Length: 468
Length: 149
Image 1 (cartoon, each protein chain N blue to C red):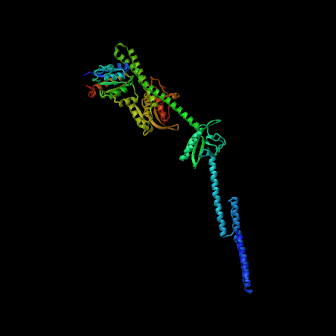
Image 2: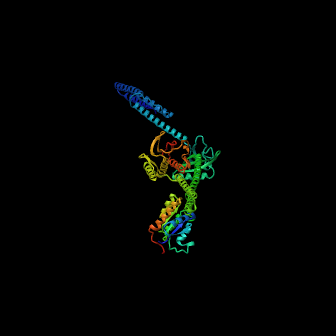
Image 3: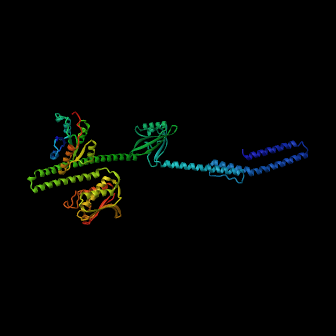
């Protein structure tokens, strides 16, 4: 019943009450009746006017409000707003309703956005998402765009697991499903399906998603599996090669050991028996014979030195690096002191920069520095006043350590041969040596990740630069 | 001066001749027993095999031991010498061509008394042999005899 009707009922009741009173008053005196009637007529008139005003001020607005809200209710369009004019409780009510509608609209918007986000996430996922019932029936799924379904059939909804994958795999899948339901923990398993382009491997993750429901996320990891297999194969290959290399290295070590041990023994015999011949049959040999024996001896000793140098060279490559802070200045001072003591008659001026330290293998750096300083000492011996310098300087925009002498130097045309094993830029009669020293130095510098190069000119001395 | 006995464990006959020659020229009276491999050396020391008739209570005064030997190498021989009560105190000098650090360390670890590297230069080699003979047989005070004696 509308409010207007209710008002009309009130009016009707009032009118009928008036008529009853009229009936009751007709037994009274005329003037009294008249007075009462006039009063009542006025009352009715006032009431009618009052109702009219109420309708205008309240009831019609209430009707409007009710209609608008009912329209919103029917259409579901919560973007609509109620409009109640004026400034009273009713307009406050309208505003409150509008606020409510706005909040409702906001929360609906948020819900929609969140749903869109979830959908976007689901769409972007490279997984097929399926819902299984406890009995193994597929209830629904979200496929991966542009990919085959990870099932044997193209219409899988309503199908049982045993129809979705081949061979004995459904059994395993069901076992995992039971596990997921019983333990509440994620169950992961792989299965495969043969397609036109070969076997596809799938990883399925099952998790309980409600009473008797299992959410299953399936991903095609064929490529990953293939990459893993390739990686394993490659690793095996590398291991095989490493193993072979280790065998070669072991053989090489055995060879080096054998060389150092076995090659020296016959040399000792040659040298020893030559010397015994020289000593015990001295009177039977003429000077030429004796000089031949001396040649045999010096040749065998030189070969022994060569063997030692070779072994040292191979040891430089084989030995393990032990990094520490090495005081190169102190090292150079010790080496030069030893050189001076070996030939005290020579007049050599050493200049050694102080405070040069480097990170490296102390033993190897000593070998390198000794070779360089030995060379400087050797090739400057024809100088009346030899000068040998060890320092650190910038050359061609690069900072490097250097060993400099003012000795015989060498022709830069042969600089590329300088660091090769057995390469010599002087005749053995002029300067002794095996031609392995600089090859050893270079290996040591390279093992430290550094570079080595030289600058020289014939008769102008030589400078060897190196970085570490 | 008593003749001292040296057990020379050496498979190379040239080295054997050179070593014996060097010892002969030294001023130390000595008698050299040669074992040509590790097995023979141990047989000699413990009176076994071809040396079963030897009085095993008499031990050499010095053992010159090469490392690279057939069958039982020098390091193993040294190990067995040090493991046996009868021989554990005997002076053992390693006499080898090897310059390998691992050989050096292993020899000392196993209880070698000295490590001499055979040089190719015979004059140096002879010097070394004569010095070590003088040192170990004359200057050095030997450990008291142990074992069955």
